[in-house]
Image (cartoon, rainbow, N blue to C red; front, side, top):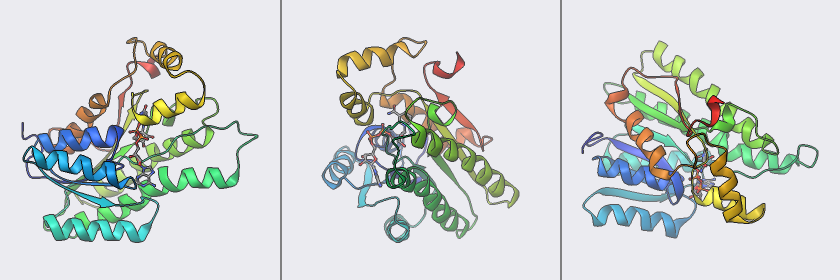
Length: 258
Ligand SMILES: NC(=O)c1ccc[n+]([C@@H]2O[C@H](COP(=O)([O-])OP(=O)(O)OC[C@H]3O[C@@H](n4cnc5c(N)ncnc54)[C@H](O)[C@@H]3O)[C@@H](O)[C@H]2O)c1
């Protein structure tokens, strides 16, 4: 309990999946949570379920690819809670395509969420975190095992997640050398059972068969559950990780050690 007591945290893409699980666990550990997403009904419901058990949570409509909407989210977070301690850049989209079939339009749309969304959030979080006295904070970027290794047909997704991995390291160095007291780390999940994975499997055949095949890709014998990643988010958000920056926290059931 209280591992992130009173920290003010923004979680993007918090209506479903890993963002929702992370927001819930952060709230249980004492954080004040701003949940943002484009799926308003599910986002409001997630924030409500935190408030119903005595936590503090606010939902905001927010497309991470829009810079004006990032400015609005920062202003509303400061207006409601007075500070920002942690940003979890979680919102992301995944769909595959063979490279020779890929379109520029689809490629750019995916980048605008997965890569530009992380850039915009990081930019405005740093501005907010460095303006306070003393400056400080933590930024957590959801990359993927697909940011470390290649996966067929996921060229745009792998590229975006590889970009998030190296952007994290660059910004971590910048913040450390500028003395901003802002730590920046990425998380690299293996396959985790969320709507993203379920929808992807549904588009490519039978979901149960696909889940079995995905289980077999992980040396631990099964895919992960959202809380497996939420535990990592809470760790990187908390002061327990105060000596960690620019790192990639791999939580993948052993997928990438083979
Ligand atoms: N589930 C996995 O196996 C897995 C593995 C590795 C990495 N990841 C990454 O973790 C993050 C969360 O994945 P998930 O599995 O929970 O996905 P999900 O599809 O289940 O949930 C993603 C959430 O992001 C929101 N979102 C999508 N586009 C948005 C936008 N433009 N602005 C704001 N919100 C938007 C969706 O509405 C949804 O609520 C993603 O960045 C994903 O790439 C997931």
